[in-house]
Image 1 (cartoon, one colour):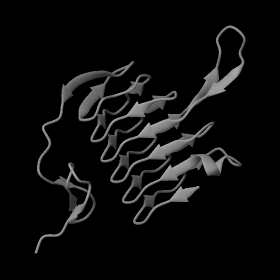
Image 2 (image 1 turned 135 degrees about the vertical axis):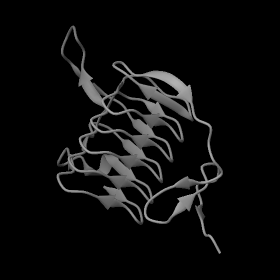
Image 3 (image 1 turned 180 degrees about the vertical axis):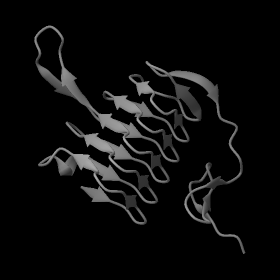
Image 4 (image 1 turned 90 degrees about the vertical axis):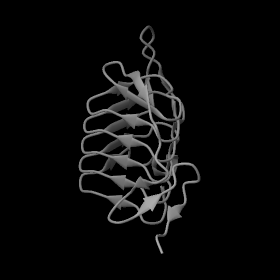
Length: 152
C-alpha cells in the first residue's frame, strides 16, 4: 500500500489483506471511520479527497450468469468528497472535484466537477468551483492546480 504525505486515516479502515499493493492514496487525503476499500484490483485515490464514515469502494464482482469473478481499476480523482455511507462499485473513473452525496451508489464513471446523488447515483448538478477549497484545519487548496494556498 502506498500512502502519501499528510494523510489522515480514522479507526476501522478496512481493505483486502494480501492485496495492499493495489492501493495508492495520494497526499492530503482524509479517510473517516469505518471506510472500506475492497481492492480486488488497483484503487487510486487522488490528493485532497475526503471520505466520510462508512463509505465503501469495491472494484470486483461476479458475472451474474457464470459467477466467475472479475475486477478492474478504480480511480478517484483529486479534490473529491465522498459522503457518509456512499458506495462506489466497479471499475470506474471518478473525475476531479466530484461530490458524491451521502448514501449514493455510484456504478458509472462521473465527469469532473459533478455532484451526484441517489441509487443509482445520477448527476444532480455541476459544481461552481471557488478559487480555493477548504481542506482541513486552516488549509486551502486550488481546485484548478491542486496546490496548497499559503496565505501570507
